[in-house]
Image (cartoon, rainbow, N blue to C red; front, side, top):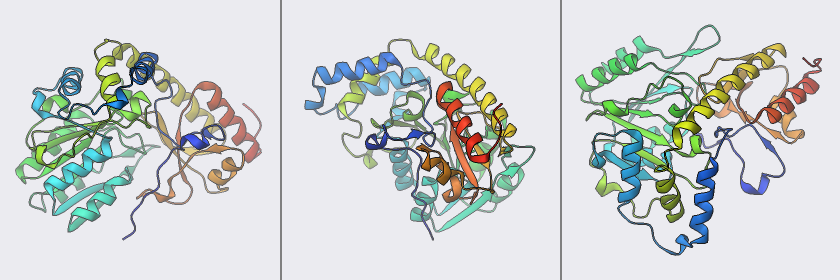
Length: 353
């Protein structure tokens, strides 16, 4: 079995060299108030001290922000990937059901911890990906205590599963004494949120990265909302002092909703414009609810051609369920997006719009 280890993004050493469309961070962020608090944390030298091992203040503000029923359900981590790893370590699922294409790390975890890994595929219908709901329910009914992982909205396709569909899946999972993990890392980009956090129960685990929405991948922060007793499976000092300081204070400022509204409006308008431009260039693309979308083009290797021009997109050929000719495009500010379109016009020898 091959483990998919490739991800989008560049490190800080390459930041001056490449225009990066491969990393699906918030094109609006990070919020200026959060940046100032990060600077303040450094000036106060909070990095000289260990973070509070129990993270009481951070968990409290997260609980309020996410409207979680109990503070005891909130766990904080050094990114969503660590949260997922901890949940898998706790559950040790015999059977894991995956829906492809989706986040590559689910495959690493499933094939590390599970004896049976069942892979289903999203359905392609009218330029969008769709959950194979009936097939998923049928497979769930075939196993005792299965674990299902759904990314909602899905990375890399931008597919959104409505709350009523999730509810039916949760009920079926509960009948089989199984578990559903929902990765809601991109839910804050959605105008009409389909979050399931307030419906948390013993068969449902929510994992969420704050890295994406607040555009702070280098600082790493993620949460898990769960009734599972994960305490004995937690490593100490998972979240560094700078994040603990800055995020605890930022979420108390009451500025998130304005930042969220600004993000949603920009993403909705810019993605719509980008999709129309890609289609004008003769590139097949798939509709998305998020700040990224999938394209399909076989005539030229767009990844290599763009890389020659110091632009990086996500080569999606390594993502389970996709293959050669698939790419993920994550939007940036409008000026950068226009530059990408003009560069593609040059590569494809198309006239400008």
